[in-house]
Every structure is written in C-alpha cells, then in structure tokens.
Length: 363
Image (cartoon, rainbow, N blue to C red):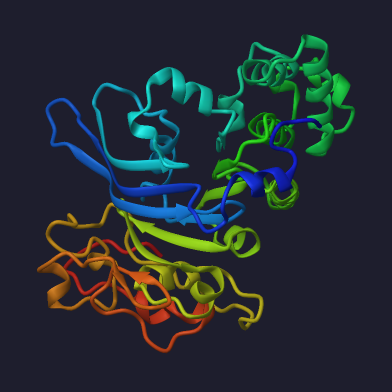
C-alpha cells in the first residue's frame, strides 16, 4: 500500500523523537445541560505522545477517556460544550484551528478507530465506497487506484477475499471484520497519530486477540504513534509503553507500563489490577472488585473523587483536592499512596470496602 507516511524513515527525518507529537495541556471539557448544573467530564488532563510511542488512557466507563479523545479530534458538538486548555499537535493548537484545517488533519495526520463499528460505519454504503472516500478525500488519486489501495488495505488487516468484501455492506460482515474495516479506514492515509477508542469492546476474546494483533503490527509497520483508550489492562500490557490512569475526569497516575504493573501506587490503579483474574491464583479464589460504582464520588474541588470507594481513605482525603505531583518514577495524585505492593495483588488493600455509612458496594 502506497502512502506518503508509509516510509518510517521519512517520518523519523520529519520529526524529532524527543519532541512530543501530541501535547495535551490542562484539557477541560464541560457539558452544560438545561436546568441542571454544568458537568465537568474532563479536568486538568495533561499528557504527551512522542513519534512512535504507544500511550494508554485507562479507566472505568465514565472516567472521561472517550471525551478526551473526541476533544483531541475536534468531534465534540459546538453547542452546550466548553473545551478549554491546549491540544498541541506538532506545535499547533488543534482547539484553535479553523474548521477547514482541522478537517484536513482529521483522517490524514490524525485518525481514530471508534469502539462500535456497527454504528460508526454507514449501513447503506458499501465498504469499498467508505474506504475509497477517505483515500480520495486526502490524496490525489483516481477512482481505480483508490479502489486498488482499498482492496490492499482489507487484505493487510486480514480480511479474506477483499475484492468481494469491498462490494458488501457493513451488516454483511461479522463484528471482527467490521472492526478490521474501521482500522483499515483509519490507517488508509498513513496517519502520524492513531487514536483507538475501545477497539475490541464488543468482540469475543478470540477475535479481540486477532484484532489487537492486527492493530499492533500495522502501527509498528507505519511507525505511527498510538493513543489506546481502554478499560482492559490486558490490552495495555501487550500494546502500550506508557499508561495514564483516569478517574472522574482527572489523571490519577501516570507512569511506564512495567512500573505500573510491578508497583502501582494509586489505590484506584491497585484496585483495577486486583480485579483481574490471575492464572496463578488458587482454584476458586474470589476476585477483589473495586467497591461501589464510578458514580459514588465527590467533586474534585472538595477532595479526592475516589475517596468514597477507597480503603486507604483518611480525613484529609475529603478536605482538600490532591494535586498531581512528580514522584520521580511517575506522576501521582494521592495523599496516601500504596507502598510495597507488587503486580496484581496491589489493590487488595487499596480498594477495600469504603468506610462510609450505608453506601452500596458492588460484589
């Protein structure tokens, strides 16, 4: 497949690996609803992605991961939404780009794989038309060449008989194939940055592994940077270099993948790891879920939002908001971090039953 960014050596010549490709600075997203108080879905979010780097945003549903990605892509609605901060792509603030320039970047330099292919693909347009449309929108090629490249893309993502699939509609494909089509569309123009938003959520375990392998190989082949949005730490373990853990719209821990799995420090990170089934656990050993639900929280302006669910909570956790601070090997937002923990056992003490009166606990 030919593309202006398919040559990794060219990407290395154009960009310094020490300079961030994407730098998000104090991003905040507020939704205004009629007759109700505004909702701050994302707050004080900052992270960087360098060329070729794979970075994860991890957290439960409702933590603000997808809203962060949509803000970066400029896909949030104009009405009822206020986006603040900076999203610097190669030094340019995407939040202040004119709509025409942002449309040119989207799909060309920055692309996104959405989590639900059945609703992301147009049900009344063939797969071939949807693929060639992206190629011809951003590159000066005729219809025949675009069709040839679309067929090569489907073959590259592992779809059998790609020529026939180009003539089919999304409902005629399986869930795994539809997800591969979305990956092909996202990578059609060789983007420098790929955002994958829960790309395997609706797939069974076997197909998840296949799709992730395709995604990992294609990103490596193109030397693209990757922002992986997921709640599955197993995906992070096999795909990402750096992990940002989000809770209630803010990043609570940010560090390298190996450090995070070896020694999580935030009680929420420990709880996520402890809730994963372990192959080395005794037969019949119970899982250790994080108690409560993501809605069981307090505003960040009053204290730590995770405090109602945290077994390490102390009085100061609900008296002032913790600040994201540099701890040498990681950034951490916690007054009382976990100590001396390793791997998936970390959160067994960090996410114990909260010391609160009459609050529901998920078992």
